[in-house]
Image (cartoon, rainbow, N blue to C red; front, side, top):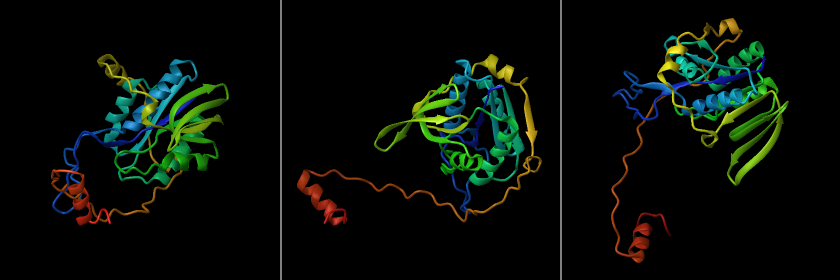
Length: 249
């Protein structure tokens, strides 16, 4: 069976402003959580590939606490065939996420793995690259167009100078950019159907992976308040003001 594996992450909703508690920690109480937007794009692309007859099933996987099944049900409502929930209560660093995904890859033997290019909470942009290295398979990051052609794929990727076109062998790892697609709107009947779709729970230990904490968050600080601007009468006054502020010499 031709399987596409999509890794998704639960993150704070990007429409919600993060707050700090008096002790400097993030205020997570009552925080609205959602699928990482870049992962939604990866899932949408996998669904489109399946709809074009290039895959038989789309499997979504997440590494998250036990209460993250709501986000997996959202992915199933979008159209994923089944879901795998690797239950782990603490945050997981990119290397261990890649190791856990590799264990799932070895079980599922997918045609491709699709991930968002980064998560909007920590912005690491590392997991896809690490997975490809551990799997010893090709990778294309920041994909803005993906075309499967038998045992190969042609991918457009965003680079500083424009667009780069690459041909790679499958299986491979893809990380998706915003320009790739627009995720579909979920309808109520799809939400109801998602409740009946398979959702497997598993632990890192069952996958043979020991999760370690290598990094420690010491403190969070809010961005500095933006200073008030002022209007200038002409270019000469603007240059003078910039020199006074040390921007120009």
